[in-house]
Length: 232
Image 1 (cartoon, helix red, strand yellow):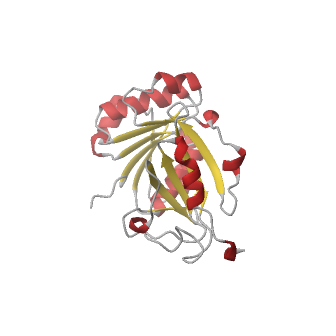
Image 2: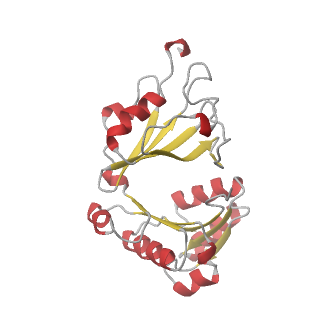
């Protein structure tokens, strides 16, 4: 089976971009990080071990072609500028990147690019996490972000318990019965990104990122992360 996301380009070496690059390179991914500011690019290049750090503009078509953007499974635009993120992600997608993602803070921009070529636009400021989501009883949801104008959600939850008390801990992904429209997009373990396949097993303390297309299914995701009373 082909491993999606094996080759990744990240635009923006801020805190988010830098930490993502660290996690990916430690998990064996081939990562290139593009940063406009020369000093910042130099600094992160000294801290990263296997990531190729490039000083330049992620919206530079020639640069993206030189770095073989058409062979990349994922392009992540994570700068602090919405316009730059949108432009570079759309350009990367047009030039052949399999998937393109951009962080967009302005709600109006998310609506604007809703039907564009981008695969996903994440708006942290659109986060509509209810009190129920902030802490699931006998579970632990630590973050959630609204996607596609609030219709869908990306949820980060911590797995607790063991094979006897949890519906997910100690089980392979192929054994987990997810709610309809829900997909496990990533697993973080000890600050490292775990490569996903059907045999990947969720362990106690894993941070699991789940994409939920239909927000009405969120209660079902919450139940998935609940553990039985014998856990306490």
